[in-house]
Image (tube, rainbow, N blue to C red; front, side, top):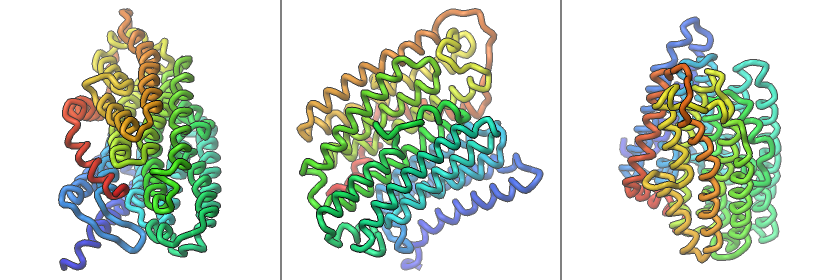
Length: 469
């Protein structure tokens, strides 16, 4: 039993996810479609609890030579599982309910494959599950969403094509395509360098990094609000998990990552361009979803700061900020999604929101202030560690640029806050209990972890140790 159990816990997670998929298919075919709600949400909660239990117990094992459980995979899978829990909560009253549950279940399967990946094959298949499930989820809401679904599909297809070419270059050196095996195979410098460039391009498309973020704001704006929350809060974070795994496990041993200049300078440049592009374009947006789309692009630039540093502190900071931004953006899009159902879409239409619903106005204000890096919220803690990691890696210029971009973002967040707290005679509206619950969970995290970030930083440090020794 002791020999079976170590490999059995990841299998239990896989069985729970398979149950979610099969149950959602059953409810899709049955007449009682609303039955999925409590069961699906409870299953996700159980999965998240199991993952964090593995993290706290120091569980570590390989499974089927495709998956490996360690502190990195357990922390990020557990955290993003909470994000999926929040997405299901936000989508509680939206139609189509059963279709949403089914596609979110497939997204969770993709998340599992990427987070626990032992092989690059698991990563690419997991990314495909995530992207295609999201495309079909958008389409399930009706023909009017064909354009954002098609644009997202094209972006995913381009990313996959480039990824596969990079994969083909490494295949002769390790047919198993395991992360550790490729690193130990000793491929030639030219082949490694070329595949490295292709991987950067492919995963930059997935993470919406500049200049690979074509159509991302269009997709965010055109998709239903709850799907936008899924893309910004889960999908982009899954791509960062893949980036950390591939570049820190496969390429670190070749001497072209970390202390050397090639890949570190590439991420240095990507970080700067992504931050400036996202923040500068967000300044002129009039639609709230497009503003948050460009804001999310700039937030990806902050995460790249830690990856550019390529130190233990840098990776720790990136992991911390991946989780922190997930809660911030899902909470924000929960409110945006609810207001979208009330035909409130432009920033000007947010005028007088405090008189319509004070909870929504105050909550959105707190979440945006956190994204801007205002203390004592979690966004400040995350950016402080990120900028510190750049300083310790002698990238003082990158830290200063990050700080400048944080101040730049305050302007467009303040523009929305100013609109919300204008006094207007408007009709009061009230969100559903599911929206209130989801936003409250995000607020508790943003405030509590902002005041006391040590626990999450400790977990992030342990997770970073798996990648950076």
